[in-house]
Image (tube, rainbow, N blue to C red; front, side, top):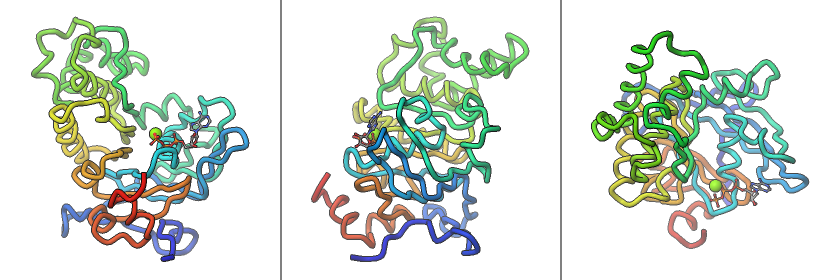
Length: 281
Ligand SMILES: Nc1ncnc2c1ncn2[C@@H]1O[C@H](COP(=O)(O)OP(=O)(O)OP(=O)(O)O)[C@@H](O)[C@H]1O
Ligand SMILES: [Mg+2]
């Protein structure tokens, strides 16, 4: 079996692993935004992740793929400490955001989750108006000082999420009255409103039809100019379309990670090959 390819060789004095965005060959190299090292996660005494080491590039989309139950969501939740909220979950190892250990006692998980926003499979707008959904985080974190500033922030966030044109005249109607695809863009606007650095997306399109999916994929492609995005997807086609880096997980282990083009055309590990060609999962 070929050697395991992950980013663990970036330990100690080994050269820092820089991921090049192949979609912009010759363009600027991407710095590493998130550096995970030897991450192990347990639910009670059941281990869900085994020594996962991965570098996630800044201003790019990283796709996490692999069969159901392989630990993709678990890994995603390590990045903004959502596993803290699961009774019995233990996380060991190191996850750095811009070189800072997210599990450090000095880190406030509430602030961390504003820096690292999350979008789930099922759109989850709050039972509030469209305006209030987007304004919510800004209010909690005291990001604006006047009504007009808050209104401007809501408008900018909805524009960035590609939803403004569809909701500008109904801002004070319930967010839950939007279509599934619109709700997902509303949730993305809500995440964007608190100026995150990273956006985690756990199968954000799996409850959407192909048109709404295409819309979210376009949006992800625009957002990567500004944010570090990590997306879990069961769609190989989607991973190939939207991501620049792909990480393949299997049975709690990171089997390999690399530029998306390489993972899909020339995987090193037979398990990756089998998964992307639909032989299992
Ligand atoms: N809250 C939990 N309590 C106990 N075990 C859990 C919990 N969440 C996940 N697990 C277990 O951890 C392992 C990894 O689950 P995880 O949800 O991370 O997988 P996944 O790759 O996201 O799967 P899927 O593609 O089905 O969403 C699985 O064996 C799962 O049963
Ligand atoms: Mg999952």
